[in-house]
Amino acid sequence: RSARLEKEVAMLREKIHHLDDMLKSQQRKVRQMIEQLQNSKTVIQAKDAVIQELKERVAYLEAENLEMHDRIEHLIEKQVSRGGHSSRARSKSEYVSSKRLTGPKPLPLIRVVET
Image (cartoon, rainbow, N blue to C red; front, top):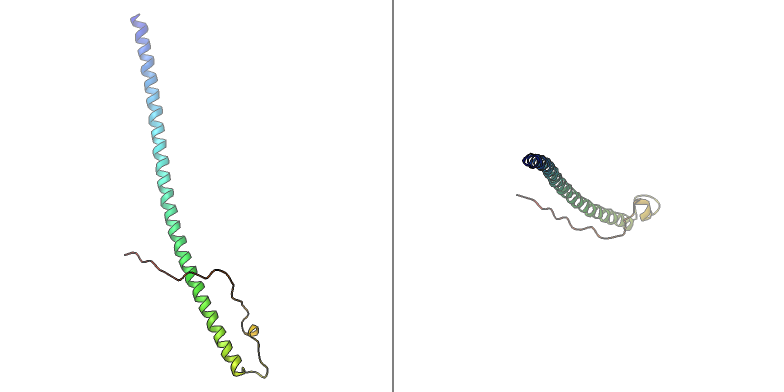
């Protein structure tokens, strides 16, 4: 009976050792997954910051573009009201080949500077 119990104890110890190895392996995998998630979060935050900066730049450039269109229109109106420099009167469309796109107004540029 003692030999049978010793055999059972040895078998149970082997199972415990196997389960312990499996547990350690699973813990390693979980740690790796957590690390990957943290790295992904960092990458996403960096990309979000780049996207926000690009959005700010686009808004600034759109505002600048609108301002330039307004200046061009103003100069054209001045030229047209003076009679122009040629023998025939030119229409606005001859001076400006691009049209202002209608749509949502660009947001004003607000730059956030970290110190």
